[in-house]
Length: 311
Image (cartoon, rainbow, N blue to C red; front, top):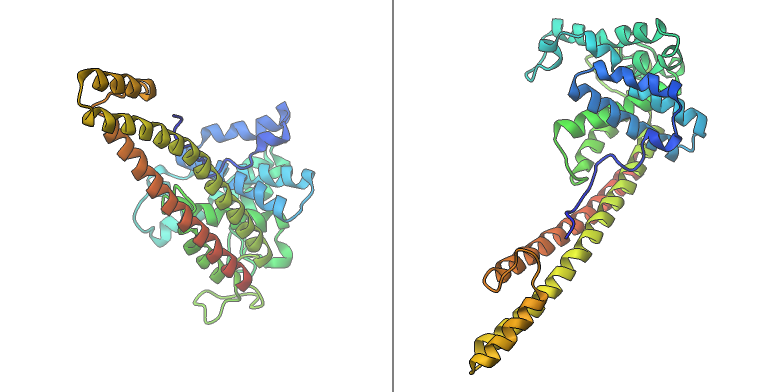
């Protein structure tokens, strides 16, 4: 039986746009990044692409925005590894070093004619609508839409990855944090240039929530398809069990052998009359566990929909 396969980010990627060789060039530069940053960049691009779809952006802008997202952290290749990969809290000095990846990334793009059109991802993805972001402290009217989209995708993936989610369960926790960031800041310790806005665009956040709901439904469908195979295996092994019960109660050796041959008809590879019950029990446990997970995912969707109505 095939194993259950679910890829957290596989719903849409840039391959769907049939990139030509010129566009491939922009993406190949990611090869100079460390594995974690490269994976994060790929994730942010995938999320950005999905958000653009739910915002009904045209194909040209979606493709452009997605490539910008791929390149948003390209400047991190020049951040010292001991700072970039530090697991404990950054010092103020280290944080200032990290922040330079935006301007470094912008310079990398601007210095390369093939990358120049996509510099917006690098320079704008940490700007905040209320002016509390970096490197320029811009406000909403000065932050390009692609920068606003990538910021939401970037923060979402950073928090999801930090929590090491392998499923859409408890994603609502992350969305709750983003909802707070989308609201106008009050009594902030950080000077706010425009108190009409929060840090991120609520319209883009709602599009992200639509992405998450859609992908959670996709995860459910993946599990349900997998469970079709599990149920089929259980049904087959139940037939083995029926023959086994009759075999054990048969009074003659001829009858016992007859039912044993019946068992063998339904046994699969590496299954025997002695171990089939253990395998059956394992499948039944998988079925119960996965059904519970599906129920939890449906409840998660309900929670996200309620959160979405509050944005």
